[in-house]
Every structure is written in structure tokens, then in C-alpha cells.
Image (cartoon, rainbow, N blue to C red):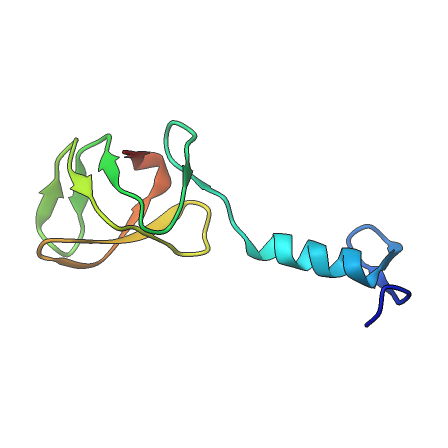
Length: 100
């Protein structure tokens, strides 16, 4: 598409330029994940737990202040994927962590 092309935007009910439509689609793909304090999280960040969490299925409790290294964002604004010793596939809610 060129800049002279227009696309119908169903959300707003208006015709917008193709460049605007591409910009909106790019912005929709990026998800902002914020920790309990409001800091923006990114892939590879280190976080600490602000609350004791019982891990279901692992029979283990992660204590407050535990450092979690190298997180990954999942695309959900409330969940982060991480690894911890002895626990595979650990997914934490962003409301229980603080960026380090």
C-alpha cells in the first residue's frame, strides 16, 4: 500500500491512511508490563518478590525478597515468565514483583 491508500478503521469507524493503520497495528503488538510500583519491565530485567508466594505443583514457597534474574515478557500485561532453581515454567504475576 502507498500513502495515498486509505483503510477503513472499524474501531473508530473512519477512513484512515495506510501509514496510520500500520502505525496502530505496530502499537497494538507492544504490551507494557509494569511491576507493583509502576516501573516498566522489559525482557532480561531482574526483579525481586514483594510477597511470599506458594508455588503450586512444586511444593515450594518463594520468600519475599527472592531475586529472579532474566525475566521474559509473555504478551500478557500481567504475567512474566522466569526461571528459578528447581522450578521449571514459572510464571509470576507482575503485581507481586518489583524491578531491581
